[in-house]
Every structure is written in C-alpha cells, then in structure tokens.
Image (cartoon, rainbow over all chains, first blue to last red; front, top):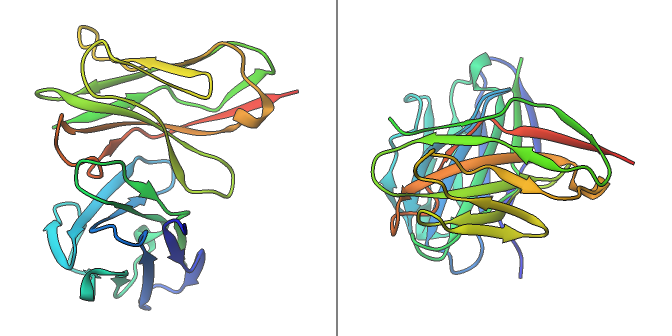
Length: 113
Length: 115
C-alpha cells in the first residue's frame, strides 16, 4: 500500500512567485493534515481537512496560503506570493479517522530566495 | 497555550551507549504524548505513544513513560545503534480521544551514533 506522497520533494522559487505543493494521502484516509517546519523551529500545524471540508485552519499563517482538497482526495497548498520566511519543510499527513494514527509524507522542502 | 520542550541537540553517542532525550510539556487536561522519528531522507514515523498517565510506550528498544506529576515523556534506549541516527521529535496531542493528527511538536533532537 502506498504511503502519503508529496510533490515536489524540493522547490526553489524567487520571492514573489507562486508555488503549489501537492499531497496524496493514503487511499481511504478522510483526514488530511498540513504541517510546516521552519529552519530550526518546531513543526507547526497548519490545517486539517476531513474529506473536502476544512475542519481546523487555525495554524494557517496568513492569507497568502491557500489549501484545497477538491473531491476529498489529494490536497494542494498554494503560497502566493511567496516570501523569504515561507522557506521550510512542508509535511502532509493523513489518517483514517481523527482518532487513529496519522501517517506522514516525506515533506516538501521549499526555499524562497 | 500547550507546548512541548525537548532537549537541544545535536547528541552524539558511541554505539551501545545509553540514550536519553528529555521532553517536557505544558498542557491542560489529559493529552496524548508521542515520539516521532525522521531518518535521513524519509518522512516522520511514529515511534511510540502513550495516551494516559503512567502508560509506557515502547518500540524498537525505545521506551518512554508518561509522567503527569513531572509533565515529562523522556525517550530512552539502553544500547543505541548506528541505524538509530535520526531526528527525534516529541509531540503532544489533544486530550485523549481527540484528533491524533493535530499535534504540537518540539523542535527536534538530532542524534548521531558513531561506530
């Protein structure tokens, strides 16, 4: 069974550009989470989808970040326009229910220059 | 608000040495506690967890006991191997029964084990 897959694994973009990260959860997992780790800091929760609905988006830093999960399958996280402080590793995780273990992807390393 | 504090790294040990990585937390109620590990080039993996006070989580020779009186969840292993080299994250989950994916993480501790 395939695990959580994230694309791309690395992305380097210039300040002001747009970047879209993608997460494919484990098949059948209704819950999908996005996290971010800025260099040297904690991994921070960004938001939680249940199917296509945003259950909790309290961790989204500002309105330059837009997450979607159309159809309740894969999810995208768009950063527009990107700023230097957005650099970090973005993790996606999925779980079958909200009370079961969440499985993480390998992360996308985003560098904004 | 809720938070997790874990010891700063990096930690460098020789093979077969004893490992302790300290983790303390601040939370209301009765959170669940987790240790995640990230091996080089891989994603986060759940290493072990404990959902209530005095529970001991264990896996792959690692152990951690949920101590409510000291608000701690220290990770220990009696004899580390080179293959244990990784970054270890302590994490806190919502009150027992809540979402297991909405986690609060510590900063991570990088462990390097030398042969």
